[in-house]
Image (tube, rainbow, N blue to C red; front, side):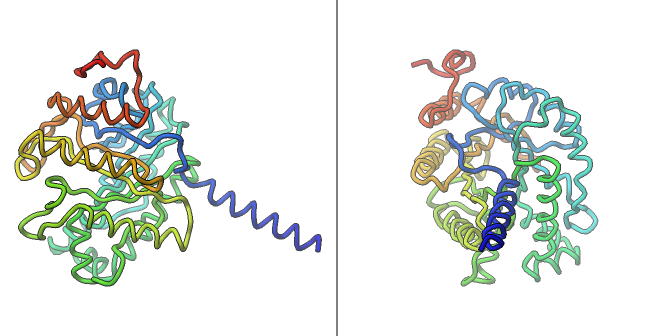
Length: 330
C-alpha cells in the first residue's frame, strides 16, 4: 500500500510540474493591450494596458522593447516571422537568436508570451507560390508545422519557465480548412495556451470576395470548438484570445463607427466567459503594409478614448496618469 501511495504522489508531482511549465492562464485580470509599431509608443499605452504586442523585424528589437518595459506589462512577442524559411515557406525551430535577444535585456526574467501570427496561412500562401514542401504540409494538414512549433514552445519554456504561446490564425485559413474538411475541427497549434483568429471589418459580415463573408461568431466558434477538443486531450488551461481592429484602412474599416461597433462587441464577448482570456487590439500606431496605409488608434482620438474606457471597465488603469495622453478625464 505504501509503495502505491508513493507512486501516486510521484505521478502527481510529475503532472503538476508539466502543467507548471506552461503559462498560467488563470489570471486575476483579463489581458488587454495593443500592437505597437514604435518603441516610444510603449509609454503611451501604459495608462490603459497590462500587456503589449510587437512584431520585431530583427531579434535585436526584442531587447529594445523589453528594456523599455519598465511598467511591467506582459510582452507578447510575435516570433513566427523570425522563424520562417523563405526558401521553403516552412518554419524552423532555431530559437537561439530570440533567446539571446531576450537574455540581453535586464528585464527578461519576467513572464512573456510568444505570438505565432497566422502561421498556417503563411504556409498555405507559400504553397500557392509553388513551394513544394509547403504544399506537402498543407496536404498533410500541417503535421510538420505543428511539430515544429511544438518544439519551439518546448525550447522557449525550458529557457523561460512559465512563458507561453499565442496562436492567432487568419480567418481565411479557417475558411479554407472548413471547405476541405467541413466535419473536422479547424487546425490550431496544439501547444499554445491562447488561441484566436483575426478578421477586420463588419462583425456580422467579415471576409473578402475571394473567400466569402461570414459572421465573426462563426470564425470564433470554430476556434472555440477546436480549443475545447485540444483541452480535453491535454488540459493546459487554454483560453480564447480576441483580436479586434482599431485602425482605418481601405477594405477593412471605412469609418470610426465601424471600428467602434466591432470593438464594443468584442469587449462584451470578453466579459462573458472566463475561458476568454484577453483582448489584443490591432493596432496603436500607423503603418504601411503592401503599399496600403493604416491609421492606428493613437491618431483616432475617439478610438483611443474607447480603448481606455474598455480597460477601465476591466479594472486596468493608472488613474494618476490617465489624463496624460489624449483621453477624456472623468
